Length: 192
Image 1: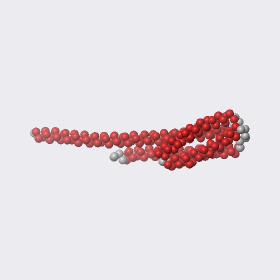
Image 2: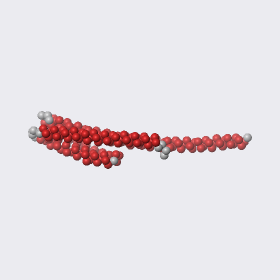
Image 3: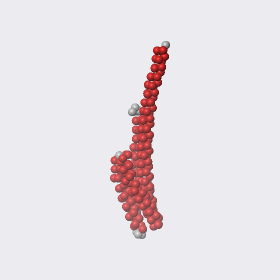
Image 4: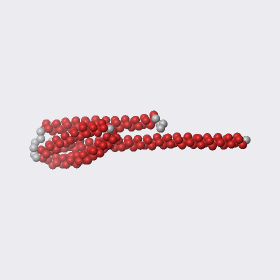
């Protein structure tokens, strides 16, 4: 009888210890998976913030350029001056944040997006901005502006808007793909 009791007690203790160890390992593995998921979600949030920051800055600059062009068609030199000053403030904000955004884009999204920003979007902004500033100076000097130049500037603004749309769309696709990949990896490979 003593052996039976000792066997039951030892079985109970050993089973309890083994089960406890097994549960601890499962909990630890689940905790690691949760931490990885939280880290990945934080990275996803920072990518989303990068996108929003860049998209907002580009939209703001584009809008100020459009407003400046619109004021050039008016007869009010004061309106042109006001819009030019607003554009200058926006331009300064864009220039101040362009390098950090480029570095962040390269680090988080890859060189492709930075290249597009530096070689497609920025040159279009720069060239069109120079032309709008030149037209503003001519308007301020009392010169009559060429309708064809204004139409050409409008056309370039429209093209730039298309370029910005494609860039933003591609960034969003990249972000959605990364999010889907994150959750797919967590579902398909929970073993660590």
